[in-house]
Image (tube, rainbow, N blue to C red; front, side):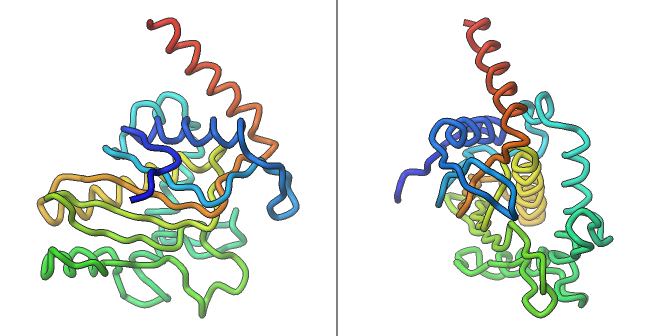
Length: 219
């Protein structure tokens, strides 16, 4: 297996690690007309993902975390995304039907713990005529007695939203694992465009400086 670009123990460490890499090594580009610093085709591995990550709780923005949590749990349309369907509606009522994809994954792995195709999507091609969800593929499998997850995203903003995405993906993984009576394994996140918007660069630089100073002080 190819080594991930960021191999971290926790979600918080993964967030800080990829943000640091982006700001140090990323190229200048633009997304939706806004300037970004970007790394292409990035893989992140989190060995022990937890939705209640301590680093995210300390350094993340509570309003942004609440917004992302609502996106993953509330079926209401999302005004900030052009009234697009939320992740919750895509996962639990796919295609505006009663198809609960999370329940489907649980049942599939319950019937066949060796399955390599417990795979679901948030992309609704018959409905998505403008907004395309950033996180589009969620793949669950059981490895070494634990429930693991591999996720693909076309792009993730690791200044404002990326840590929220990681928290909610961990929550989904915990939900599936609990239903199957399994411990949570690792989370692998594959991102085509891992970036930080210019508007968030100062915020992330400050967060990274703060964590570096705290690390030095503790030594």
